[in-house]
Image 1 (cartoon, rainbow, N blue to C red):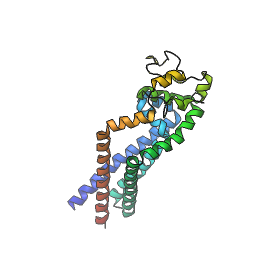
Image 2 (cartoon, one colour):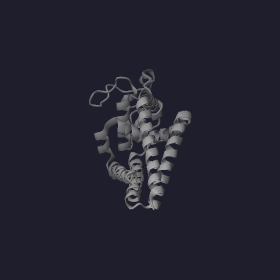
Image 3 (tube, rainbow, N blue to C red):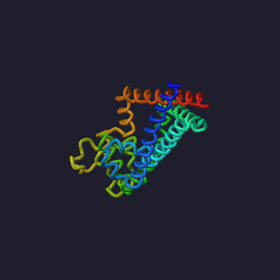
Image 4 (spheres, helix red, strand yellow):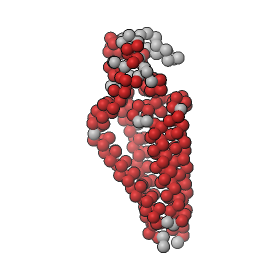
Length: 244
């Protein structure tokens, strides 16, 4: 009984933290959706990089909602010794765990497929919105500055974009090597010839390179999260089986 009481208390406290994290993520997600530029100014290149591949606001809202529900079920199930809540907590956590394992396998085995999918998704948006949508343009500029990259693949992604048309068929300054002053103004016009000779790497390749460079850290964090999830599932089933 002492072990049961201890684990029940720990489960309640652990899920209370998850619940509060969910509330925080929901709040940040709503903030990002309403006022994205201020989010970029505070969190810088890392946040702008994420903006390229997901809608950060909606992603944070979805993640916050899941954590909110998970934390609530865990807290309520442990405190009230409610079997239904505990089982729902276990099932949601199991689904998340399986999805994470599947995503890791896809990322390792089908990196090229993922790249092709993102290319089909992102490049057309660059061609239609860069230079006309201020928030989208600011996000890409912050990313290219922070990662020292150009476009998704390279400078050709900007061909046909509003920026390209308005600026006499030239490219963003970041697509030419050492072409940006400290105040983000261009030193000279980035023409097709200069962009080609500069051969600035695409942001997707640069992001992959940064991930590979920090693979040990990323893997360690992922392994730690997986262990916590397994522990939470085991504890929830222990509490579930001991509830009368």
